[in-house]
Image 1 (cartoon, rainbow, N blue to C red):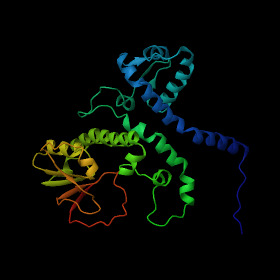
Image 2 (cartoon, rainbow, N blue to C red):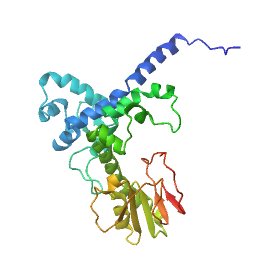
Image 3 (cartoon, rainbow, N blue to C red):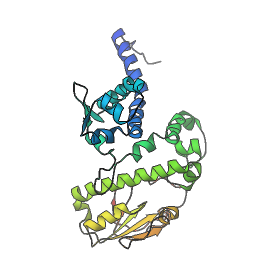
Image 4 (cartoon, rainbow, N blue to C red):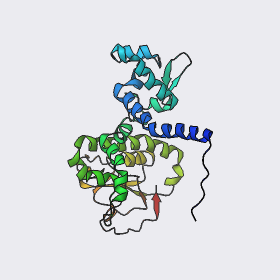
Length: 282
């Protein structure tokens, strides 16, 4: 017997329609953030002394006068999503979110974090989302490709992505490096206990070694290996601070007391040889 479904009331239907529109248009928030980054709005507010009105920004960014009403809409959406702060008089200022998008502002020795929002709103990334329904319908045998791989026949942080779109591939790596630069300082300051008793560490998918170098700086006694794919390691000059190893973590991991894994580690079809590592830092 089919389950009985209660017919929504008029009030519920009105709310449902409003919710549907809200969910359908949520993507405009990320598009507004991308627009703000490409226009340089956070940097312009910073250079104007930390506060600016819509006319101030129009002048600072040299935008065509007919676009001012539309800029106002973008600014209000950014304020609604806490990317900017706004007074009742329409004066905008930076929030912590927009502060890390300002050109030239250094955080733990690294500059702004624009690469991540630009990467996840790139054409390649958005197209993979548009192909999600087709991905579910596809009956390809194991291993199941990610939606991104299904649409593009390529994967982020892989040689195939370089061949597909070199600029977007570069942006993905910049996003990862920016995350590492800012995130590791917080980890070292707030989670020092994680490193107690460690004398050696292997950073899997460690990229340019930013994380490992920060750990060595804070804990000079720890010997750090940085493991990443050959095409990544070959671009990084050896600095003598950490040991760079070209390889694949699904084959072997340089021996150490602990291994650090990052979110970009993805499932591989290759066979993985387990290594006796007693601690994993996530």
